Image (cartoon, rainbow, N blue to C red; front, side, top):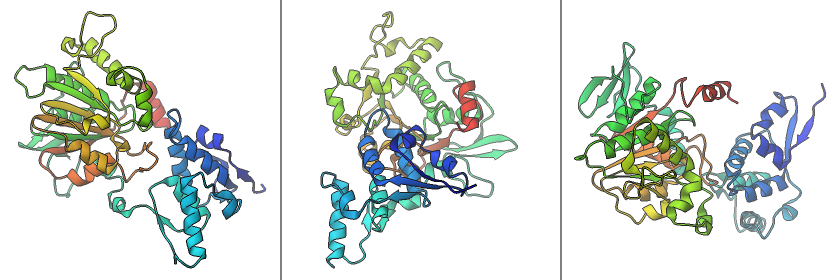
Length: 400
């Protein structure tokens, strides 16, 4: 069969970021991408509807050396209205004039990396993050046989998980229940062990979507804040970094909670589900109302920018989608935590939507790599066959 040379349009990459592998058909066909497509992806990467898909498409292009980016010519392809193109033009101009010998562009912008490759400009990521690649995936919360244990890790002994916790070794041969929620598999049960342990202040949980990390965290938070009158936790904060919020947040109507609602509606639905399992009346302003509204004295949704100026005490803080936080944002956020705080960091480093972050350089990965080994920190990777439901199980197994 004759070799085919496919030229991809932007909409094809957005429809299926993994289309390149199927179109190549092994090594049979060649894939070409117009330079204009990169410029179009650059404009779309902050679109609230498809930004995360654009990020996946760019990641695919960047990781495939066999894809050919079509260059219409250095001068014609670079647009003075585009800052990235102006950077490339300035580098090329300085090199041609002999003012810059063998330049190497350092950037974490993946589209700029692709554009630099087209014009023969060597390009590298900021290497400080390279040694920490996928730490949140590699360290699952378990240590293998023969490995030295770390604080708050698990190991298997005769088919039973053993916890190396603050109180010493303990076999986890029982099942937790948090606010009417029973774990569906052993890993969810161990996550609850960490979430409910009084000696662990900071917990991070990594998993693909559908394994219940947000639901389990909310169930544990309700138990910790509403179960006992003498517990140190009086309030729950939900923090969710949403890449596309940016300046758009100010244009949305209403107060902070109403502005954030479109981005955390699923959290409200999960809380209602927990309320049905076991009444959580103190969580709502009027539990008898038809439209339940959260009581800000008990549960508050906060954007990252607001948290930075706060001193949080006596609360459970859930940070969702932490893979979309930078290292500096992560540090700024976690240093807001005062006395009596239980902090839960959730995310999946394989689903980074931020245009300037990647699988190695993101908040969740930095937390695992830097805090592993501290006596009041623990990490868990959720896995198993039973997740959100049978349809989700089928999708995950099929790798749709």
